[in-house]
Amino acid sequence: MTHETPTINAATRERLGSRYAQRLRKSGQLPAVIYGHGADPISVSIEEKATLAHLHHGQHVFNVAIDGAATETCLVKDLQFGYLGDNVIHVDLARVNLDEKVTVRVHLDLVGEIQNAKLAGAIVVHDHSEIEVECTVRNIPESIRVELDGFEQSVTVGELTMPEGIVAITPAETMIIHVQIAAEEEEAAPAEETAAEGDAPAADGDGD
Image (cartoon, rainbow, N blue to C red; front, side, top):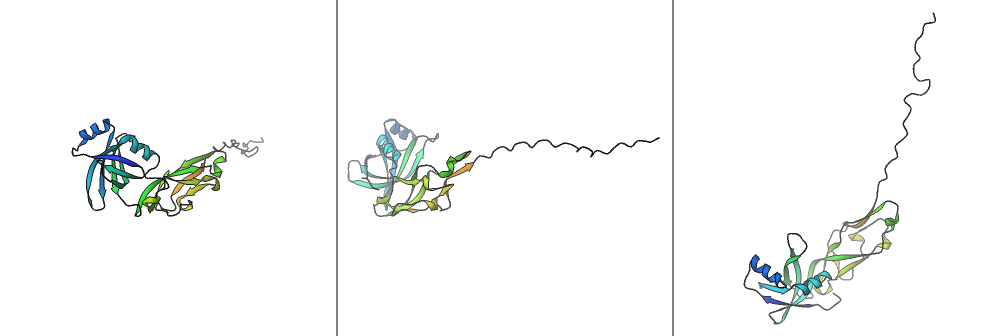
């Protein structure tokens, strides 16, 4: 991470269940759980607007201030979405320290244009928008920049230039982006003549 870790406020919650969670969300809070490092899990509510804004900008790690006490450094481990898949309804946070190695999914920032995208009939296919990487918590990037101009037909994970200290876990052969050329319809071949001149057998005739 090349920027300061943001702090979000959290409050412990004793009442659980879907109805209470709905009330929290209506009041601008998100249900969450904090676990890991040998400590008991804690059910909390966190600020929805601030948390989602940071997540939107690729933030993975937060300092969580629980009930106004000392903060805990936490990694976002899982996001639960509503049944339509368009809104976050629950967050799983794991306690971490900045120097431990973790595995996270990081967004790919595609810049420029792959060369064969300029060909007639070219269709650019975006196969993956993020990959899984391993690095220390303090080195988790918001995104990984991919310069497309240097590639002709496709880009795989193994061809990415990874930032220092970051190792790709997604298999090297995984396609990130590639170009397909739309197949042109073959022109119908002109109909062949059914019989060449003189090929048809001549009718027998009597000379009498």
